[in-house]
Each structure stands twice: as structure tokens, then as C-alpha cells.
Image (cartoon, rainbow, N blue to C red; front, top):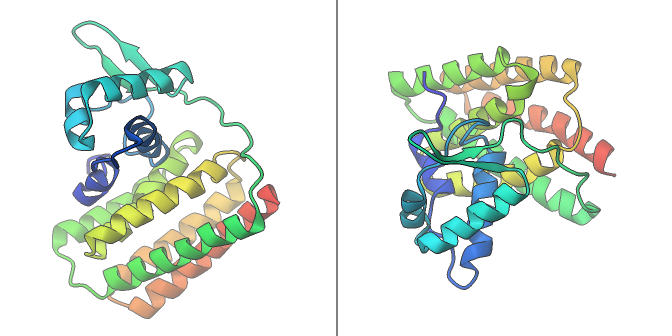
Length: 238
């Protein structure tokens, strides 16, 4: 299995930005790409020309956005035959997030529950072909075997794969944006080994329910899973 996200996930993070704030939106979209693990640390971004086409902005805008993120340590620019723009490895240690209000936290987590529970239910209700089934199980396996440094990135891609398998393309963009905000908060506190073990057991139940075509079980399993990370977020951010 490749380590790259599925097609709809890539469409979601590389879609055109809004007019009016092209630079800021391009920076935000690149940050989202990094936070979601669409491009892993040490891997290269598409070329400036490709990014300009994907985001529907000028190459100058892309170049300036890359410069901003290089200055803050998220990207590294290399010249020469094997040059390009690479995601920093390791990524800079994120600062503690600005104060998160209870209302903001509940808004983001509430939307997450709706999006991810709906995605799991929809994916379980579809007839998935062999390739999709293999892809989902393989993504579960790589998360279960992931090192601490790769865990959150691969965990994110598993969740986005479920969103994509729901068969609702517009859902993927919403799920990606929501997950990027959640990851911004998750990345400010350490991984807990026992929590990882628990999460992997829950991942297995979620994936098994989807593959067995059991929408109720898939929805219940993912809601239980999300409740665990919600408890940690409230504990660390309160």
C-alpha cells in the first residue's frame, strides 16, 4: 500500500483558495496539508507551478507562502537537481495554543462527531470493492504498527480514508478542515502509550464494523473512540 492519501483527500487539500486573501489562504492550506500528514516530514511538496495551478493563484503567491513557512521552520527549500520544497523533519515543536474557549472547543468537537460518525455509518452502508476494503484494512494496520513519531499522521490518514469511503466527496473537505483544527490542539501535548493501545483496539472495531457492513456498530465504535480524545483535549486545554 502506498503511504499517500486517497484521491478525494488530495482534492480537498489542494483545491483553489478564495479570492481576496490569496496569500493567507495559501499559507493556511499548506499548513493544513502538513498537519494532516498529506505530505510527511522529509517529503517534498508539489512544485510551485503545480501548487499555483491547484490553488488557482500566481506563482508569486505560492513562493511567498512557502517563504513564510520556511521562515517559521515548517518547510525547507533545497536547490539543485534534487531540490524543491520539503516538509521539515522534524517539524518545529508547536507552542501551546492560544486560549481555547469552551464554546470553540465544543463547536469543533461537536462537528467532528457529526462528520466522523456520519462517515463511518455511510462507509459501512456501502458495498466497497476489494481495493477499497484492502486499503482500509492496510491503513488500520500501519497505524497499529506506527512509531510514536508517525502515529498521529497515520491516524489522521485512517480517519480521512473512512471519510472518503463514505462516497460523499464534499464531506472529505469538511472532515479534513475539521481534523486539521483538532490536530493543531493534539500536537501540543504528548502521546500517551496506554491511550495509543486503547485507540488501536477501537480502530480495529471501527474498521471491522465498516467491512462487515454494520452501520450502527461502526457509528457506535467511532463515537466511543472520539469520546476518548475529546476527554484528553478537554483535560489538556481547559
